[in-house]
Length: 231
Image 1 (cartoon, one colour):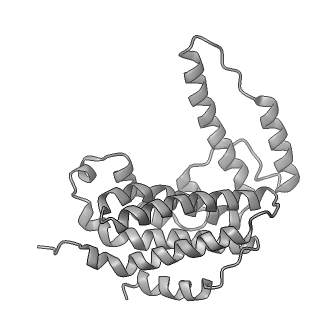
Image 2: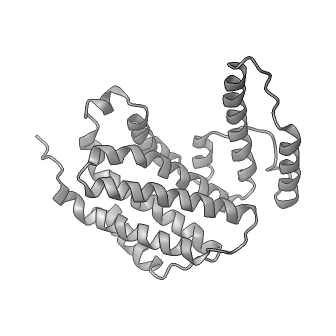
């Protein structure tokens, strides 16, 4: 029988997450007031959202609510996938935005039609955005072609992580039976902090590429490597 994972077991890796969150906050403060183009804005806003998620994660984890904290992991993985992909191929930001805009139109159309009204999408605004992207990125990247999160992960060779960790935390988000029954806790408990630490570190690296200050980046890379090896 596997021994139950305790708060004491959790403490060392949670300390790394806590320190990474402080480093992320420092990075965000260091770029405050600076102006950026599309990619810089994407990285900055994504990093700010990551900071919100990891702050909440640390708060509930420190309270000993490991079960609650798992619900915050999936969005952090999604941010990590997208930032890695856009860093590697900036033009992917258009296809990501295009996919999200289709989903937004579907949502708003249904909401408006429920009120007996006609939905009119902002096609002119979208065309302006598309033309702007065409001036910023390769023409082959700016195309009206949906992209799945799996394809985003695949673009930076992270499809294996998608299949292992992302699919695992989707179970908690979607309230799958094996998640709500607690059957996945023994599998995920020790992975939670490692997963979050990796996601936050990737965001810090992305912020550094746009000029953020991260004085402890090298030290965190070494500690994260040891954590991933189970040291």
